[in-house]
Length: 224
Image (cartoon, rainbow, N blue to C red; front, side):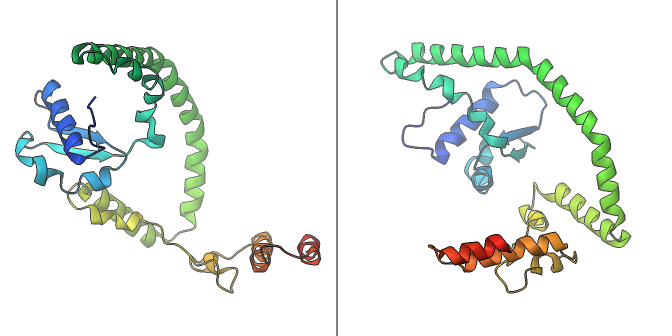
């Protein structure tokens, strides 16, 4: 836990990261996971700033927390921290540490039940997911599947050293405002179904209406 005196500067995060490495019994561990909601930006020049202070051979695995889950503790601390503003530095640290340790202890107690529930749900879904994936893969050529598999494996093995290899994972936006309502499907070689064409037609007509459509225009869409 670090104080941010002048906003969320990288210097504060660098210091907190180095202190975490220093005060944690790492031993011979040479790999750490750094979770930060803006880690994609923060990691770019990290070694230029603090590389000389990192342990030799340290490999940093970066990650972004799902749904800002690491910040869920703030809802509890926000009601506690104002009471520590007039406390001494030692007392303030002890109060905040006590509340965070209490939260961690409760999470530790509830973790087995949560993990067992998630494991049960995942096991039940695995069979149906495997069947769906097999059917999806059966409609693709073997050459394409082999090529995509190689690209993914290459990206996953090199992403820590060259982030640009992950560009193949990026989705490409499709222009849905063109005159052809099936452009998004044809661009990937999948024909649109009659139901999809009908829905797309209604969307196109609704877009052509004014912000305050006339009553007859709305009736026309309803009838179609």
